Image (cartoon, protein in one colour):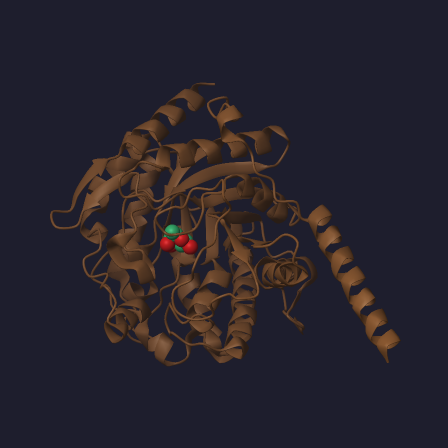
Length: 447
Ligand code: FCB
């Protein structure tokens, strides 16, 4: 009996150690000594595109959709007027020119276009069309996102993405937008951050509809892939040379304790659920055990949203606010997660297996006093510049965000803008980091 027990112990210990050693070799977690890195030595190709990003619900104001209903029912801070961008977009686009941007990513608000099922309002679509014209006149490339976390409240009531039979309504809305704008808009993101949408809305319950069910999460993940694949086919059939992609959040999962097989197992599992399953959907046409018609190779580019890595372990919160751990040498950002620019390279490498050009569709930091943002920007641009010179095909960088805005479950407390916004007066002011970004753009467009 003792022999059996001892043998079992030895086998467990040996396999645990082998697993840890394998993981440490296969998934290194580099950390640079930033004081030795010359972050100013960067170079970008002359046709590299410099941008910023926003999303409709976060800036436009005056919306009635799944989010406004959720804010109300959960007693969250209300998005309300937001940046009043719907009325001020012309002035706001001046800011894009002031920064010298050459690309701008924004999203379309479905609830404006179809406020009631089947009742279409053409006026808002005309406004989006005017925005596109204005951007083009300024020499700025528009990048349109069709779904950035928000959709009509009536569609949410019908179950939104949780029901396969609802997808044709979503696709009909997208086709309508595409038909109006695709004569001038070349680059399209179908869905913003499918994994954030499904995990925040259906596992952690912090986004609408506030559910907490793994089964539902998996169903949403599949349906988002179905929606993306169907959209890809439909939009490409309308305009084959349009460039259609997804904005994928790549959060890296690293073990809190690098000696712990359990922490490694949790990290690998989360990485698989967050990025692996989704990538497999694109590479093989299968998502979480189901075949998804048309998902194989349904990308012309991959949008990368990179913010941080997440240190995982056995005792991780599964409810309420996430607690973020950080390494000793890392600085915490206002959001709570660490600044880890080294991970930007890992995220680029990860999405590069998809074998399509990369657009950085989001990167930035919550920093109300603008003390960390300049360093954050420089480090990430340095990593980007290195990746490009090492041969990665990266077309653009969109800073999140152009201006402070409504940060979802965090409301107005998180300030991500190159421009600071005073939400009482709607005054915008360029931050020091905005000036720095402008300087970098000017210098690198000359070369
Ligand atoms: C991303 C979202 C974006 C913004 C940033 C901070 O996950 O796509 O809308 O909230 O985080």
